Amino acid sequence: MHYLQTMVIMTRNAVMVTHLLTADEWLGRLGAMLRDLRLQRNLGQVVLATRAGVARSAVQNLESGRGTLATFVRVVRVLGREDWLAGLANQPSINPLHMTRSAQPRQRAARRRHGKPKTKA
Image 1 (spheres, rainbow, N blue to C red):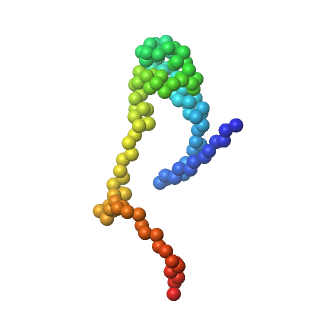
Image 2 (image 1 turned 135 degrees about the vertical axis):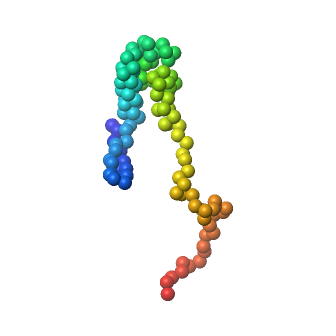
Image 3 (image 1 turned 90 degrees about the vertical axis):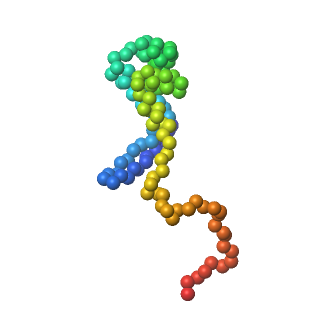
């Protein structure tokens, strides 16, 4: 049994509730996307497999939610969707709003205060 987690994403105009998928659900979704893309390109499994340098059964496994990462990368490249891979490897960018002139990198940890806490008089 698996549990479906829910995440709430707040944007300027709306609140979106999205469900976090399990690993098997992601694999199934990616397999379906690959199958749809292959069919849009009017390619058979054998042709795609040959161009990707993998066996037809490897393509069949990917489309059914099973397969290896190496096979996935090869097939995605043949289908011309390397942008999917680039999206996985995005480097975080620095938000200029978080950078201010007054922001100095911390040089040391703050001191711990000992003794009684101050009370308001």
